[in-house]
Image (cartoon, rainbow, N blue to C red; front, side, top):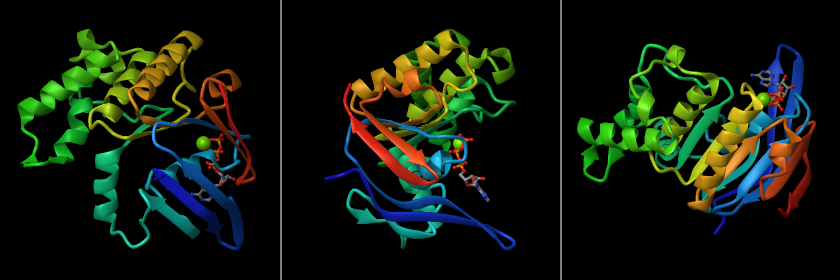
Length: 232
Ligand SMILES: Nc1ncnc2c1ncn2[C@@H]1O[C@H](COP(=O)(O)OP(=O)(O)OP(=O)(O)O)[C@@H](O)[C@H]1O
Ligand SMILES: [Mg+2]
């Protein structure tokens, strides 16, 4: 069973009488435990696709199946619950809360999550956030605020936050875009570790050498999928 399948996905943005077709008749199947890179020129629709696949935005037309279930009829709350349960997100500009410590930032998804027996207790939230920060090598920075961390460390906090729910899928939009090459390699190594544990990863990148580390490389051009290569 595929994790995600799309059929003839289209996304059209309308501004006044101008329309932009950001995604064009896109068909994609994502299998469990794949590591996929998405490349393409600026404006080719990479972020738009990631937002749609991550249930943060809706296509204008076409179909989307998660575990063979169509998501079209789901309410915003149901979509948010699916995201919370299965998905983690990492963005180029980190999207951390500036006034919260690294630990609080990582706890955030758990504050809104409901476990099998309802709410997760604060001490369990804390324990799980600590382990996630430990996983990304930041056990000694848990009380630092984002402005007290380097770019690479901020991105590692964002990754800890993305994995704290044990997601099946991680969506990353230019996760190394704001980092020097050493920090970029560290972040990539982290994704490779998560992938080795069975997490499916979709990563948008401008960097060809990073894209080539993925096991499947998808290329977009003007919103259309023009290449889909497996290898590595
Ligand atoms: N909210 C919006 N309203 C109107 N047009 C939009 C909107 N979001 C994106 N677009 C347009 O859709 C196209 C695809 O945008 P998208 O952000 O997906 O590109 P991208 O491949 O991620 O580019 P980049 O590499 O620069 O991040 C672009 O032409 C963009 O101008
Ligand atoms: Mg983008």
